[in-house]
Length: 299
Image (cartoon, rainbow, N blue to C red; front, side, top):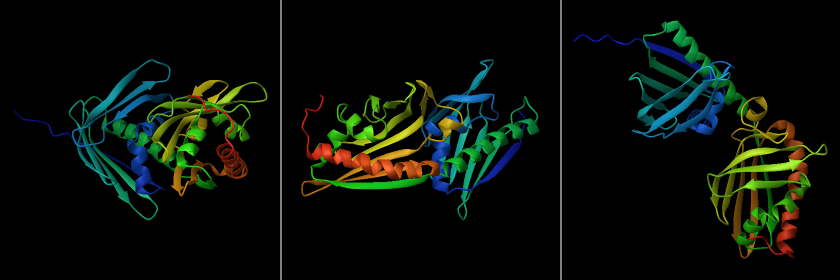
């Protein structure tokens, strides 16, 4: 039986970011849902990615008006960190994605087998539009800066860790940012958590985040997903994208009964002066609470 050889379509873009960052934003579901659309009237409400040979992926793509949607899914046949991904889509077509590192740039090339229902040019335009959107997303996130703060607290790391995260003491040391600041959720790894504050107009604002890592008494990593505006969670759009994927890391280094608490915080340049003013004050408040703990922490 004679088989028809599928034609190969190629799309490509050059991104002004290192390959490690490009790879991470390409493969992490928290980022995939933010760039995986060819036009503003489509979006990706959910994504799963088991990035390994034999692993599978799934991105649900839908029109914003609810008129249509489909699952983009497949299985990986090759994964080379920061270099190459190959997979077979659910309809049997094969795709190759190449990441070529340059001097502060990364070239991303996709070679995919064309399907038979649409003209090749239409397919190329759609895939290129998604790739261009990815480039825009990466370069926007690459503008972030990382701020570093640290403070020495004369208490064991267990005390500092528990005091920092405790539901009773957390609002006290973070009150520097907003007197009503609080969290709703769990500090367990993988959990969603909301950081909220009430403005002068009585509206609730804040961040939608997840606990990326939590090693008791040693390390906590918070990854922001979006924002809360007027009590509504916003995970898509320019305001949410400004913070999506930003990290807030806390490292606890204990030595001889004292703990050096280090904070590494991703931020946009516009918030740099604000955090440089408020974060040292907040950490000093945490130090004061730890060293002069006078009330019982909640269970």
